[in-house]
Image (cartoon, rainbow, N blue to C red; front, side, top):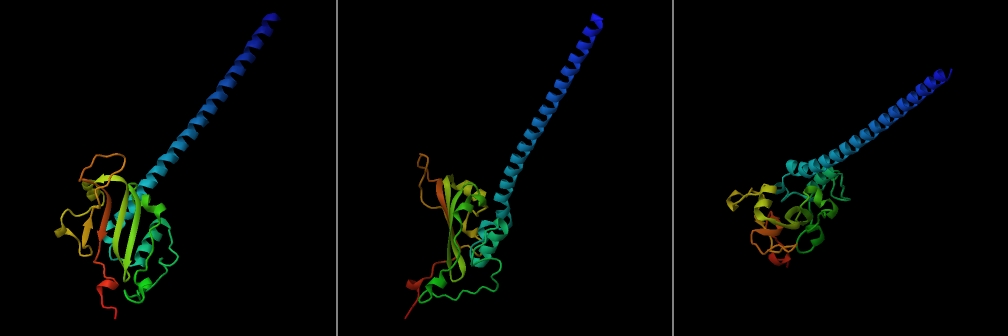
Length: 211
């Protein structure tokens, strides 16, 4: 009788041990699954950011921006980033600039500002983008980078021509700003923190006869 009771107790103990091990295995499996899901989410988010950074420039290369109307630029940003300017957006049809450099100067220089919070989405090296519109076209684009970059790196990154003879028809000049550095970089003329792309020459009140 004692032997039978002892055997029964051992069986119950083994059943309990097996049950505990099964539960531990199930919990470990769930945790690993959650971990994989989280990692996958992070990887996908990272890939989406990379895709977003490169997709706009692949569809709208930087050199094609100059001379576009504010509506064309606004619609481009709306399609790519869902950023909708209150005036210059995809719903603005048949835009015509009605300004002049003498009397209707507000209209002459009208255009949208690039939202600074979206600059790094064009490329993570960018800190700010400034637009300069004139008579209904984007005259100049100025890009400030997060940190000084090699000029050759900028040329490669944005697929810029090496010589003026290779400028597209809508580009008058490309400049690389002043030799200013951050993060204690040594002075080196091969580095810059600015890029300026000019579509056409400024023509303001001082350049025309306003009498």
